[in-house]
Length: 121
Image 1 (cartoon, rainbow, N blue to C red):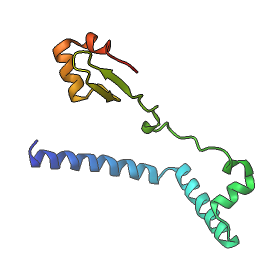
Image 2 (image 1 turned 60 degrees about the vertical axis):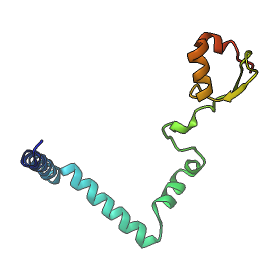
Image 3 (image 1 turned 180 degrees about the vertical axis):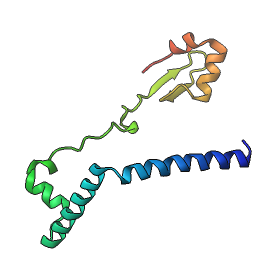
Image 4 (image 1 turned 45 degrees about the vertical axis):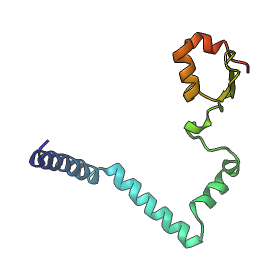
């Protein structure tokens, strides 16, 4: 995409976003929420409270509950160590996955099914 085409496309997107922003500025519901938030924060500041204080006051159990979050990608069960023993050479390979160089060489030479039969643990 040329620089000029990219510029015009970005300019078009910007105009659309500005139009959406202007529509939101005129929304009565948004104005009401902004006014509420402003008054609430002023009231909290006047009395020396924070939002956490108000939450703890209204719902004391909230701090004890675990926050609802998406499961992390790192929460997967760790892989088990597999030990292969080559009956021809007596060589042993310990691996957690199938990406071990020696294991790949054995599978290329003897076949994957044969090498899997060498699994000791």
